[in-house]
Image (cartoon, rainbow, N blue to C red; front, side, top):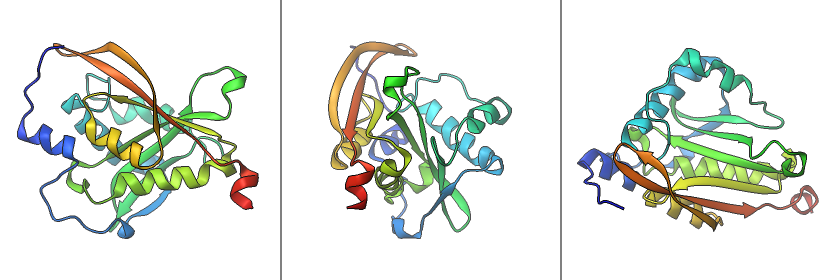
Length: 197
């Protein structure tokens, strides 16, 4: 795999570092996303697209193209949450079906993104902790994340929250001129009975 030179902005992204003094994550409020949040959600996502670090999407997306995507989520099965500080959406997390076969119904894939100006404030950690806590009541017993191998900050965060490395897909993504490995991370969740005991 060829070496890639990162700009300072990319290095800050890899460190989840905005260059600003971190504020406590306790200020962040997590709630269900609404269509009114889509512009902020898409702004965060498109900023990540440009870095080639956290998504295989190569071109920016539009709000109009993502309305159906948001409508596919439901609070009682596949939630889509935003984190906001002082009424500003600073991050988001989505649950989605892992695979369509019925046997995978208890398994979901997580995606989490944070505004580049709010990194290193514990926003992603807070969103993931909320997802882990909520999983049993949603009938979820397994959570999976798909993370590029060069996204070290995300791999470390998921690891700290109990996700294990379950697999590696070598050189499956071509991001511009670089071939990238994809790491599969996962963790099993407490059952609803365990969580309520």
